[in-house]
Amino acid sequence: MTGRLHGVVAMDGPSGTGKSTVSRRLARESGAAYLDTGAMYRAVTLAVLRAGVDIDGPPEPIVAIATGATMESVTDPDAPAIRLDGEDVEDEIRGGAVTAAVSAVSAVPEIRTMLVERQRAHIAKALTDGGGIVVEGRDIGSVVVPEAPLKVYLTASEEIRAFRRGSQDRKAGRDADLATVLADVRRRDRLDSTRKTSPLHAAPDALVLDTDELTVDDVLAELLRLVQERGLV
Ligand code: DC
Image 1 (cartoon, rainbow, N blue to C red):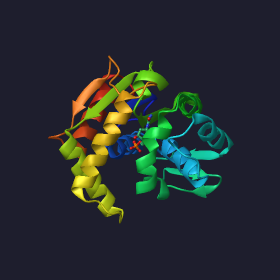
Image 2: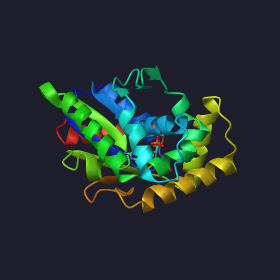
Image 3: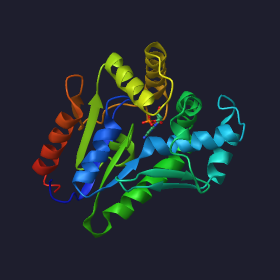
């Protein structure tokens, strides 16, 4: 156990690096809030799919649906949740339909502007009275909070990430054949890294941590060491 975190820890990186698990654990161990920004992009995507809007069509209807949806993120690391129009959609946003569509929806610049604004509001709320928050995503250190006092960018090889993602899916009762998961990891990496607005990349001052050879406990230990070293606890 460390002291209580104050300030923002920005955790970025592609899918399957263990980002969610370690971010959540870091928040729990340091008495901080936890914000999963990927869940926000996923929830908006779910709203768009439910409305029957073509995700590859013009952006206006996508933006209209996203603007009209009420989304609520619960930032308690012991029970993080996301609600769409009052409904808990935590399970549904992890399913295949949303996973296949989320990169297209999150590439729409107006969607990013809207969600970045909401993310900053969550961060501001957590920081009042000297609190702390661990925020995970793709553009947290580069766009959402470039002034974060600790930015970490997690990486791992495609194969390891697909393996981890597949195990996670199977544990949650979803189908996960390795070849399919690997193809999806590659497709999303490509889309997320090549989109025009806020493509996935490490902020120049982010600490890059390759997790191929590291367990979740190893990464967490390194993060706890870093927050102490930076005087954030
Ligand atoms: O972390 P995740 O796999 O749940 O994220 C889902 C998608 O959302 C991911 O493919 C890219 C997008 N995303 C984003 O563009 N920016 C973020 N800050 C977080 C996620």
